[in-house]
Length: 240
Picture (cartoon, rainbow, N blue to C red):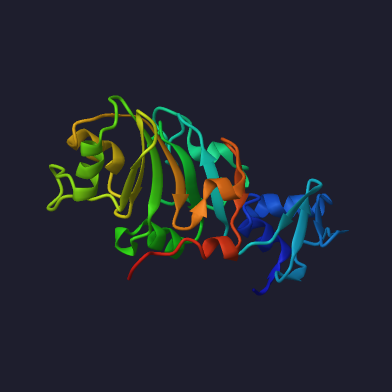
């Protein structure tokens, strides 16, 4: 942490341009640790800093790490084309501070989505070389058979992959459901693997990334929360 002028702090937290942040401060709309400050040049220690902007408290965070329960019909893109973007589910300031999805879920896929403005974190978590297991619940068009489960465990060949892709684990859940765990994170991987195995994915939900589960976060569809260090520590690779 460090000491910064108050207008720079507000700008870093996504409250708008430097000019707009200065106006907020001069208008008395900003409090620092509970006390209204109208001098935007004031140097403030960011360690343990709590800002109040328009009567809402915000803890200073150098970077934000967010978990979102993504609903269907939202795109994981800053420039969506056919559906609203997932950033519309977050406060506007996160767009100002360039928060981005970590990887992608298809517009019709629901479940756990990570978001951050920490570039190295996004890169590391998106890398298929990290072998972070991701747990999906898939609903299939045709009934699930033991042969289908075994195919997914043994590996299926996709036309643009040099080697077969295998599920880490695959368990049948009802007549038309499977829980499948993958590490590679390839494009449309669950859907393409099911198609290659002779079935079709009609609905898909991601319930966990590494040891971080959507259930443990207690989020409902469309809700989000900050991730603290103990939760970030659960996003670990299984090897290498």
